[in-house]
Structures are given as structure tokens and as C-alpha cells.
Length: 161
Image 1 (cartoon, rainbow, N blue to C red):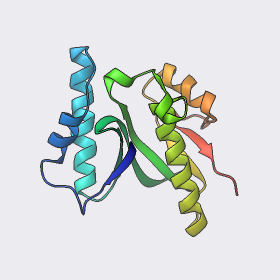
Image 2: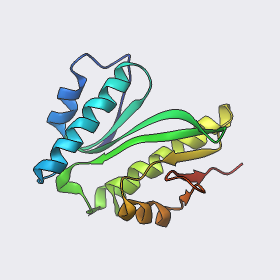
Image 3: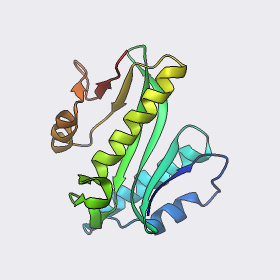
Image 4: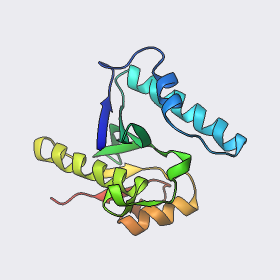
């Protein structure tokens, strides 16, 4: 059964990163796995400080991946920011039937877009923004509908008014 679990400062503890790291499969490349570990520890610390929220996507008790979200402002436009998007190594690039024939990363981005739309109904919000890790990811996000900010590495998805 597919499940999204929300973790914030109220339901997370001091060693939160240990739980997240034990639930996911890191890259088989040791250098990349070390980088992922650093990012996960940092994002978990942000959860504890109430500056971000993590949503883990699980299927039958296995963590497929997670997305970390916070609120920010880019060029004075209020935005929902994707702080980190992680897909467990064994699910990277796979189209999953359980996710309505889509990839875990796309499913999590679409989830973030829905959250942004819900927030937009209550308060001013203009974009979903993210900072792609590399050019390959820029293309992936562009295919979803993100655009590049002029003169910046950030990308944005404009929410309907």
C-alpha cells in the first residue's frame, strides 16, 4: 500500500537522520553515497529546527524516496522550495505501476505541486522552486514544466493564479 509520511519538528527526534538513512538505499558509488549522506543529515537537521518538512513515500513498508519542502522567496516572489529530492537507489529511473506508471521523482514533484496549490489557496504563493544538482536534472525538471530563472541556476514551476 502506498503511503506518504510527514516528518516535521514536532514528530522527529535528535537522531532523525539515522532513521532516514536506515530506510533508504544510497548510491552504489561511494563518493556519491557520502554526498547523499551529508545532504540527508543536513536536511534532517533543518527538520529539527522547523525550517523544512520531509515527506517520505513508502510502498509496502519500503521507502521509495522523499522530498523536503520549505517556504522561501526568490526575487521577492513567495515560493514553496524543494530543499531536497531523494530516490532510493534501487528505484532510480524506474517507472512504477504503483505510482500510476510514473517514476518516484516525478510522483514526488507532482505531490509538491499539489501542496503548493493547497498553500496558494490560503496565502500568497507564486512558484514551486528548486535548485537542480546538475544539467541532466535541469532537463528532467524542464520536461515536467519547470523554467529557469534568468541569470540564476534556480528553476521554477509557475502556479496558476
